Length: 193
Image 1: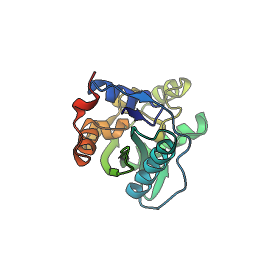
Image 2 (image 1 turned 90 degrees about the vertical axis):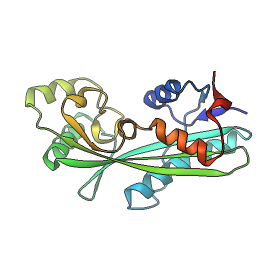
Image 3 (image 1 turned 120 degrees about the vertical axis):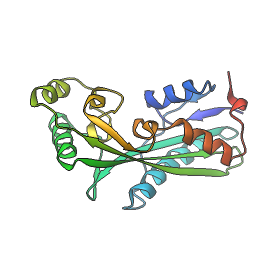
Image 4 (image 1 turned 60 degrees about the vertical axis):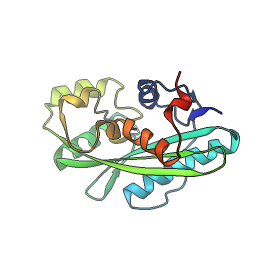
């Protein structure tokens, strides 16, 4: 019996490593169909889609998956397509002031039992000098990140966490993982190194 993280995200891998868990990483393909216009339900649906797809291939193991979405004023802010899309998103998030970051996470057991949760954090961007934004966009940190930013990176100098856990914004919190284990009546010690 093993724990498999259904994500190629280095940030989620680091989170599990910080909990001293022994796990394998197997990337799940795609987010699946859009199940709801509600951000919490949508992000949890994406997490379950990833976990279920991998659970079909990895019977006998525990599968952990997560998905993160940035949402504000009725709009979703996906991963940017290119530099100009990233710039437009960051500028819009700054103009909005406060936005939401949702992370859905789930755990599927070897017997097919499913456990899930959705977590909400609220983040505010401060004004960003144009030269600083251009320098940021010239790098690649914005690529493959919902909302075109990572709070633990460059954006940390221009954002404030107003509500929720820092890990929710990063992509998966320690609290969420431990709560999923508790729901499954599973001790983290089962996967300790």
